[in-house]
Length: 265
Image (tube, rainbow, N blue to C red; front, side, top):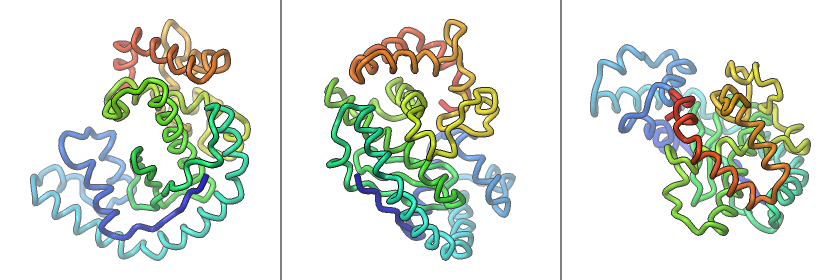
């Protein structure tokens, strides 16, 4: 496995952030911008529309980037060094989890260090964004989440041969992939190097920590935490069986799952 960390420049930063301001993305996906950058006025953004809103956001983000670009570049070496130190155990853990050879695959992954508090990932290109305020340990934790997605959907598609369009929000296959990260991450080789892994469900449910969306730590189906249900399936079955059974579970309880994901979908 090879992961290359990059500082992709102003244009990429703007593109990464502005994609969440197109269409009807909810506050879950947009309000973090105001939290981390109070110099961007939420009141002004909400009163502007169309190109005026875009122009205001781009101007403010350009100013912020110019202030932060040296810091962004400085993160690159720290993130890369930490990944190189930990990648062997990560590769072994994921190869076992997915019953596939990860060591000789996934050699063109890219982690972009950006101003974006939301960290989008791009499956077909095997690249993802990480918020620059992460430490090298935090960046690895974020990377692990996204790398699990890369391997998950490769194995999934090789088994089901379905449409990759269903692998993105708001589809049920996307929801399952987001939940499935947590059971896989329980491997000590992964959990021990991920500062976002949280075994305390109550803490994670409050959004204080966690390697998946906090709504999944609160989610209960048949009076059992959904992540415990998935972990039990994961421990008992092969990866293909787990994918089949967990997806059937999600299809059966799709209404309940959607109902407990308010704000995310």
